[in-house]
Length: 249
Image 1 (cartoon, helix red, strand yellow):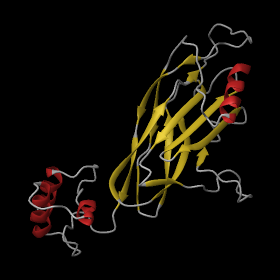
Image 2 (cartoon, rainbow, N blue to C red; image 1 turned 120 degrees about the horizontal axis):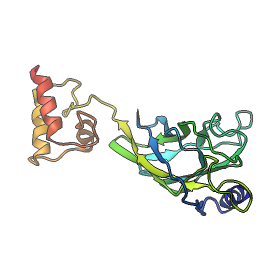
Image 3 (cartoon, one colour; image 1 turned 90 degrees about the vertical axis):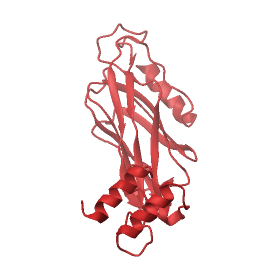
């Protein structure tokens, strides 16, 4: 147990450049899920990161990568509401990360946020739920930008493993599946309004068809408004749905 906490302290000093090491003994299957949100350019959004139940989590290292031209971490009043000088871009779930946990998050480099946590408890928490939220400002509208999480070996401990040298049961590596999320940066305008006249009609559908088929090029504004079904891609499906709408079917 002491080794786990010392390992985290070293990671803090190295600004999260060290990885935690687990003993493979009784791996469990867990899922780390990144939420999806939407907003407009200039909005501040919070991306939730959650873990499934049953992990007995004792050690966690994750990296969130994102398009730095679209998103920028925002340092909000998470660290201490009474001290404006103490701000961070993330907020942990205090019910999961109680006073027996040590944790730290930092912007490792532009486009990459890293979070690390470890507990001094002999047995990890089996509760699932939200781990933390990371705040971003949307810099510009775009069809969509992915938030991809890399999970380094994370550990669990259900208290049943063989004792380590410090007398505590050994940690084991968790089998982790990641479900990534995305930020949809909504444009200022009516989705599908290709001529930007404030209404959707057959002219918009025909313009959309011409652009998708390469007969004419999208302008930047048209491309932002062209993802009619908001799935992160502009293609013939958007054209068909737009034709369906303007024709009344």
